[in-house]
Every structure is written in C-alpha cells, then in structure tokens.
Length: 419
Image (cartoon, rainbow, N blue to C red; front, top):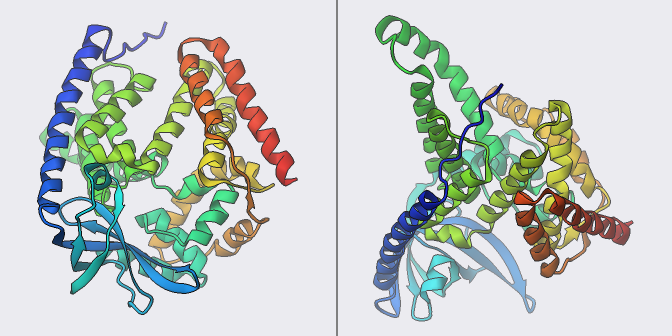
C-alpha cells in the first residue's frame, strides 16, 4: 500500500503562515513605498532605465514611438517620443521624467510618464544582443521573433501576438514551468555524471539528489536573473523550489496548497507581481492542472496526458476570450500543438545550439498562416462564475458538472460564431 504524503500546513499552521506572509508583505510594501517617495519627491526626477520594448503607433494620423522602460531601482514605465528616434531597445538611458501625477498604485504597476532623454549609455543589453543573433539564424522576421521570445523572452510585435492568440498558442511562448522543466532536466543530465564521480571518490555519504538539485537550482536562478525575472518564470521557479523542499521533507508536492503557498510568498516578497497579467495567467493554468490531477489522477497515464491537455484548453478558453478577444476556427488545434510542443521545444533548443535553428521554419510559418483572427469577446462575469465553480470543485467533485457545462458552452459559442 502506497503511503500518502501529508500537506505542509493544516489548521492553525496555515493561519500562522498567512501571518508570517503578511509580515513579509508589510516590509516589502514599506520598501517599495520608500522608493516611490524618493522618485516623486519633486515633480521631475532623473532616472536610469533600460528600454525593454520599442514600437510605433499612430494617433490622429501622426506616427510616434512608444518606449517601455525598466528603471534600475525598480519600476516599469511607458513613455512616447518622436517617430525619428533610432532603435533604442536594449540600451540604458538617462532620462528626465515627470513624476508629479504618479500614485503609489501606479508605481507598482506599469505607469505612463512624459519624459526627455538626457543621455544614452553605449552598452547594450546582452539579452537583446542574443535575441538579434537568434533572429539572424532565421530568414523570416516572424520566426526570428518567435524564437527570440521562446528562448530569451524578447517582446513580440502586436500583429504576431494577435495571430498566436487566434491560434491559441500564445502560452507556448510565455516562458514558464514547462520550459523550466526541460532546462532543469538538461542541467541535471549534464551535472549527473560529473557529480557521481566526485561523490564516489570523495563524499560517498552526501545526499546526491539534494546536491544535484541545488546545482540545477543555481543554473535556473541564473537564467531567471538573465531574463529579468519574467513573472510566469518566477512563479514556476518558486514552485519548483517549494516543491523540492516539500519532497525532501516527505510532504505532498503536487497540490493546490503548494500553489497557494508559492503565490502568497511571491506576492508578499514582490508586490508588483499582483499587477502582472502574465503571472496570474501562469497561476491559473497551474491551478487547473492541479484541479484535474486532484480528481483524475487515478486515470491511466496515457489518458491523463490526453485528458489534461483538453481540460486545460477548455478551462483557459473563457479567460483567453475575455482578455484577448480573438478566436479562429483553428483555435482548438492548439490542443495538438501543445502536445507536440513537448518534443518541439527541446528539439529547437538543440537545433539552435548546433546552428540549424531554421530547419523547421517552413512548417512553423504554415501553421501561423492558418486562418485569420476574428474578434470575439466574452463577458467577465462568465469567467468569475467559472472560477467560483472551480474553487468549489476542489472540495466538491459534483461541482465539476457545472464547471464543465460553463466551459463547453463557451467553446460551442466560440466555434459557432466563427464557423
């Protein structure tokens, strides 16, 4: 008989954890508020910031540039400039920004300010340089953008994002848990033979799995640092760390409580994540995966594999329609693309390492050209009702019936509207 691993917290312990997390959140918010007051001490402030995205827009027939910048001392803001501004993506700028109208809530989110560029530092971000080197491997600008987003989380053009959203595969390019899992496996595979030799001759009584996990964790944290702490990746990394600690202590790893603990710790330590859409989309996806495993873990592995992809697609469809308002008749094929992505991602990683990254570009472009996006929105109250039913289904399996009824109704409505 297989022993059931217990949860980390139960009853009063969970309340104590909430109190501990609240204390961390208090200090984190206090520190952020201190930074905010320094920034807004006067109506104008001089800051150093890196341009993480730059694109053109038009308003009333006039073209201009939009810059998204990350300040060295925390905070992300948008500003505009002349359409004649050269490509500044990846460069650090010294800027004069108008801070008189910024509120603390604005500061925790991505806010807009009027600004003036004072100077441009000559060094360019290694991340942007690497993204451009990846793009040079590909003859198509589209595939270059896709793999830049896939490997180094570089921003994509609005038109490309809409095409990916219409096909239901935007989540595949948002670096998160699956990507981190592949990288951790590769790191483990590289470290394992060297570590085993050292352990055999020098430290035979060491806990090998624990040491290897620490080594892999250091590599993954370096990748996280390199990507400037992408919210979805931060969630995945934290869950991986929490999961290993729980596993090492003989506690249950795959549970909704593990997700809850990770989310609370992350928001307590980094309050900005509360306003990060990518973070919440990542959390929602993991929540629905865990809900599936909560009720259907007794299925055979092959049926679990198929069922979980269909389940997550249906569960995330209302959220996708409410947020992105795009759909196409080929959208349901994302279930197949997601399954194939398990092979596609490590294969493309290998092909790019050996200089053959453009090998599958033709097939990828054919998939991207399937159909056209159609506007299709969904009222947010449907998503709210869905999540209420999903939370209730954690404890009451009967709630799966109305939950599945809601998502199937949304799916049939979406297909009917575009057919």
